[in-house]
Length: 241
Image 1 (tube, rainbow, N blue to C red):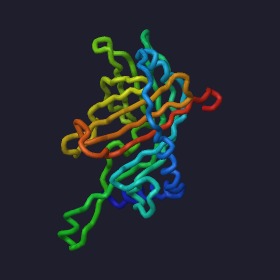
Image 2 (tube, one colour):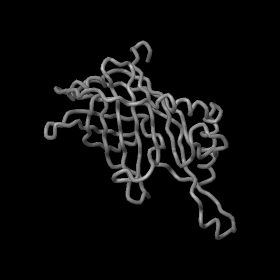
Image 3 (cartoon, rainbow, N blue to C red):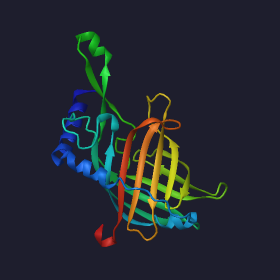
Image 4 (cartoon, one colour):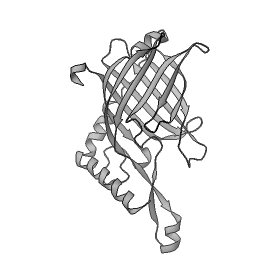
């Protein structure tokens, strides 16, 4: 990685440090809600709960860099960063489809990788920075669609990230929570690939929705996640935008 790239990452991470790692730990703790399954509901009923304007708050966590709130982390390899943003979700089509436009952002998180070249050349271990799947911002802007798949009687979703890359697939809905699994898109250099697990909890008549996005070593989530995103979505009025 070039010196300019490292400097840019250090500046970004230093800005996050000024806000304090305690805020990251508190944000993570607040979203660790215990899930209590509700009785099954019709999928079209659940989809309509996603319609609205939301403010997003949360945290992205890279477990390999440590726990949120840990002190002494590298300026480049922070374990957590806070997330903020907005989203507008509207009904589309003749069926119970939903389309959301997202502007959700956070500072980049990288991880340290031991360099064998440095050890051979200098006799000292050295480290370089590498990207973490799911930890680099990709939702500012982004678009996600949800709809019913009549062939499988399941909910389908499609997400297009800030680079115009699309991923998606079928999901399952149980009570108030839906879970989607899809292969990662544009994540080179990961042996065996990775899988994105996307969960949304939308309870009846609630002003709060919850969202979790884990990226795990694929295809069936072997080992701990590379990254975890935890979000609270709060309904807002047009005047509060």
